[in-house]
Each structure stands twice: as structure tokens, then as C-alpha cells.
Amino acid sequence: MLELDAVSYRYPGYARQVLADVSLAIGSGEIVGLVGRNESGKSTLCLVASGLAPVSVGGVLAGEVRIDGTATAGLRPFELASRVGLVFQNPNTQRSGVTATVFEEVALGPVNLGLPVAETVERTHWALRTLRIEALADRDPARLSGGQAQLVAIASILAMRPPHLVLDEPTAQLDPEGTRLVGEALQALAGTGAALLVAEHKTDLLDRLCSRVVALDGGRVAMDGPAAIVLADPALEQLGVERPARHRIAGEVAAAGLVLPGAIA
Amino acid sequence: MAPPSGNPTTLSEADRAYLASLAPQAASPYHALNPLTKAAIATIATLAAFVLGGYVAPLAILTVLVIPGAVAAGVLTRLTRVAVLISVPISISVALVSVFTRAGATVLFTVGPFDATAEGVDFAGQIIVRLFVTAMALGLFGLTTEPRAFVVDLERRGLSPRVAFAAAATLETIPLMVERALAIQAAQRARGLDTEGSLAARIGGVMPLVGPVILSSLTEVEERSLALEVRAFGRPGRRDQLWTLADDGRQRLLRWALLVGFILVLVGRVAGALPALP
Ligand SMILES: Nc1ncnc2c1ncn2[C@@H]1O[C@H](COP(=O)(O)OP(=O)(O)OP(=O)(O)O)[C@@H](O)[C@H]1O
Ligand SMILES: [Mg+2]
Image 1: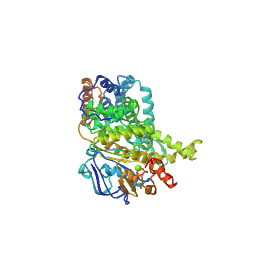
Image 2 (image 1 turned 90 degrees about the vertical axis):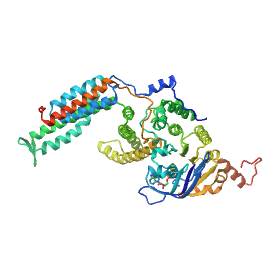
Image 3 (image 1 turned 90 degrees about the horizontal axis):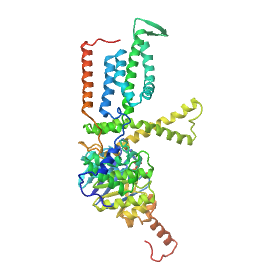
Image 4 (image 1 turned 120 degrees about the vertical axis):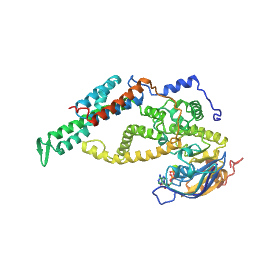
């Protein structure tokens, strides 16, 4: 379970609060979507929810962030790493830079966790297979396309089998097939009892994946509720978020005064 | 797809062979030496050249400790070129400063208020020889060792991965910065900044690149270090590496011999038992 309790956050050296009074609880097996326009604080919330801010990033946090009941503030970075995974927005800066092949890159997390080689290898094979990127195993991680790099970054965290997972726009550079595979992998992870937080502009993906959606606006929670309700709410558009196609189409149809047989909504 | 549940304890033959194939491939017997052995040779050669000073001793060290390795590795020409490229700019500044500022009895010639002394020339010459030996020794290490191999080997010996990574990242960033500079240059050219043409125009065109290259490298370093934290990089304790590099008794003996030899030289020099060579 991931919990944020009245959290406000400022980056080091900045007076402005990037997050203000955010409360959020993600239960075991739950996938929560995070939406909001650019700069609304999604990436910052991902850093805070995974404990990295302020533990590694610094800055000032008010309120409390708890992972399975333990406050993140008192944990060291590697202790956080074994409790919650974090996939960053930019796949290229997530490369360790110390590996020569994708296989070693994906294996790096498990190796750092101190796992026996046999288990590291099995997890690495599994993570590569899950995202259908076995064919990339021997490639140089520095020479991948944006989408491939993103899948490798996700596989690198999946291989660590984190109890919970936070993802910052994990599919931004993926084609529909890659997006679908990532969605399936996340669902499988939630099926094992993980709490997942997914920041995404692709609301169609969230529509399929999430039970709940939170919309941020200027660092505050503007909407929080069941995915079906939040994603259908036309007010989302004022927050700079495009609703999923099915809700937009249903809205247009209704606005035109038409009724569809067996309506989609 | 369900995640693996068991805790496998054995590797299949295929996996074992695959992991072995991931280890850096050695291009020569010198490349195949353990990174620590190559690092020891480079370090001891550098330190001994500085401790002994003069001209004969550093050149003897170069001949005995560096050149045979470079020949065995097949990199002598490349190494010499790299070492000259690295040591020439520093040597010029060393020469300029020491030739004119070193006090001495024998004035060779005078430029304005500055006297060039024979002592200054000798001092500069000795420094330059040492710099060149250093560049050759460290260059040989760099040309024959993959940073990641060095990191994995140091980690296996118990060095903090953080320290090992800092070393490797520094070495590996250089080609990345060059690449980034080229990308930014292309972007700025697309926005109409001139980076081609006359030399003056080119220098003028390159200046706006310096900031972005350094800044983007800095934020990248910050983001990268976060990404490493997430991969449990800072966890203390041993790791089971996917592959290890060979090491053997002969190399261990060689490293100890280098260390003991260096300590003897150092003590001898400090105690005045070793005569100073020209
Ligand atoms: N490292 C940092 N230091 C200082 N301020 C930062 C830092 N990172 C982000 N910010 C600021 O925090 C605010 C929220 O940024 P954040 O990256 O969280 O937004 P976002 O919702 O993820 O946007 P996007 O959709 O573009 O990814 C922005 O005003 C940004 O300038
Ligand atoms: Mg963001």
C-alpha cells in the first residue's frame, strides 16, 4: 500500500510548492492513474510517492509518505528501491551507463539486490520476455530507439520485482503494441498484490488499466475518483487532459442529439 | 505473464555459456590481464617516475613497464599519439612558466623582465618527461581496459560500487559528451547559428555549444544518479556478478612485486640511499 498524507513538497533551492496538500492512498492490487497538464506536478508526485524526493533529491516535504506503513523519510535510497520501483519519464537518463548489453542492463537491479546469479538470470529472461524484447538482449543499451529504450527501462525495474511500482509516462514513446504489452505487464503485477501509480497522458490506456484516476492541477488534487467517473467528466478538459476516445465520442454524439443503439458509455 | 515464483539455484548450460559471452573480449594477452594488474602497472609506473625524477629513471620505467605491454597489446603507435596529444598542451604551459620563473645562475636569454635560466629549462624538461611517462602509463591502461570490466572487478573485490561507478562514468561520459555536442551543434545550425566556414566563425559558432553541453551533462548526471538509486545501486554488501574476470597467482605476485619495489624505491630515495640519476 502506498499512502500520501497531506503532502506538500518544494524542490531544493526553490520557494514554490510544487505539490500542495496531496492525499492519496493506493491499495494492494490497485492501479491508480495520474493525469494533469504539463507542469501540473505529475513527475514530482512520482518522485515523492516513491520516496526519492526528498530522500535522494532533497527539498522540503511536509506531511507523510508511507510504503506498507513505513514512512519513506527515514529510509535510505537502496531500502526504498527494494520497496517501490520507479520508472522515469526519460528513458535515456535511466540507463546505468555501465553495461554493454541490454541483458546486463536489465540484470543490473537484481545483481545490486544481491540475488544469486541463477535468480538474476531467470528474472532478466522473464522481464525481457514479458515486454517481448528478448531480441534486444545483445544490443548496446545506448543505441536503442526511444521506444525500445523505454521498454528496456521498464524491464529493468520489473526484473527487480518491486512490491509496488510508480511509472512516469511509461508509454510516451511506445507504439500501440508496446503500449498494450506494458499495460498487460502492469495488470499482471497488480494481480500479485502490488500498488501501482501510473502518470500518463494517454487516457485510453488508463481507461483500460485503472480502477481510480487522480487529476492534478497546479500541484493540487483537482479530481479523485473511480476511473469510469473521472475519465468521463468533461471538466477534465479544463485541466488540460483529453478524455478517452469512447467518452469524447459519446459526448459528441449526445451533444448532436443522437442516440446510438446499444450506446457505448 | 506470471512472474517467476521459484528461487532457481542452478544455471542451465546455455545460460552459463551466455553469461561467459557477456564478459569483455580480450584483443591480446595484455588486454586479458586482470584490470587491477593493468591499473597497478600504470599507477606504479607513474608514481615511480615522479619519485625518482631526472631523465634516465622515468625513461627506464617507460621502457620496462609500459612499452613492452603496449607492443604486446598492439597499441604502441596509437598510445604514443594519444600520449603526445595529451601531454603537449600541459607541457607547453609548464615550459612557459618554469623556464622563466625558475631562479638560477645561468641566464640563457631575457624577454622583457623575465630571465630564462638553464635551471628553468632543466626543471621543465624533467617535468615534461614525467608527464609523458604518466600519459603513456595511464593511456595504456585506458586503451586496454573496458571501464565496466574495471568496475565489475573492483566491486568483486569489495570496493563500494558508488566509487567504482564514479570512475567508470567519468571515463564513459567523454564519448557521450562529444556525441551530444554534435547533436546540439546540428540543432543550433538548424536555428541558423553558423558552425561552418572560417575558423573565426567556427570558434564563434562553437561557443554557444559549451553551455548546453555542460549543463545537459550535469542534469543528466543528476537524473542518472537517481535512476541508479532506483536500481539499488547504493546497497552495501556483496553482489553475485554475471561474469568475472580471470586473475591468477602470477598476476597477484606481479602486483605485490610492483608494490614492494615501489616502496623500496621510495624508502631508498627518502633515506638518501639511492643516488639521483641525471
Ligand atoms: N528538479 C527540479 N527542480 C526544481 N523545480 C522542478 C524540478 N523538476 C520539476 N520542477 C518544477 O516542478 C513543477 C512540476 O513539474 P513536473 O515535472 O512535476 O510536471 P509534470 O506534470 O510531470 O509535467 P510533464 O507533463 O511536462 O511531464 C514545474 O513547474 C517544474 O518547473
Ligand atoms: Mg512529467
